[in-house]
Image 1 (cartoon, one colour):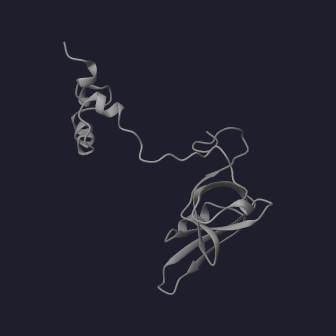
Image 2 (cartoon, rainbow, N blue to C red; image 1 turned 120 degrees about the vertical axis):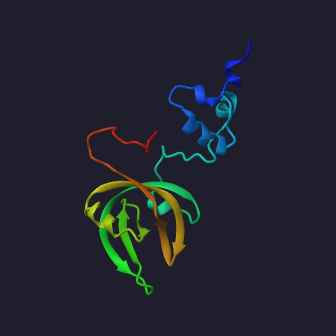
Image 3 (cartoon, rainbow, N blue to C red; image 1 turned 135 degrees about the vertical axis):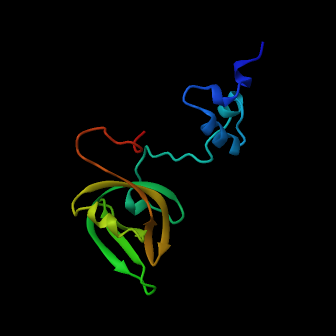
Length: 146
C-alpha cells in the first residue's frame, strides 16, 4: 500500500492536471513535496514602526494619515505618484512609478497602512509600498495586524 504522501498533487481536491503542471515547474510532484515547500520570505506586519524610528534599508509597516498627494514628472517624462504620510512622530514620502491612477485612490486626511522597504533618495521614502486603507469599521484588514 502506498502512502498518501507519495500520491501526485494532481489528486488533491482543487488541483487538476493544469495546476499539477504549474506545481511541476516548481519541482513539486507529490503531496509530501508540497508540504515541504515553504515560502521564500515572510513579512511580519503585526507591529507598526513610528516614522521617526524608521531606518534606511529596513522593511517596515507604518500607519499614518495622508498629508499631501500629487503627480510629478521626471526628466525622462515618466510619472511619479507621491504621497506624504505623517503619524505624529514624523513624515515620509511614499512613491510609485508610472501609476498615475493611484491619485484617485487616496484622499488627504485618510488613514492608511503602508508596508515596504525604506530607502534614501535625498530623504527617507518608501518606493512602491503595499498599502491597506483603514475604514474605521474594526478589524477588516487583510494583511496587516496578523
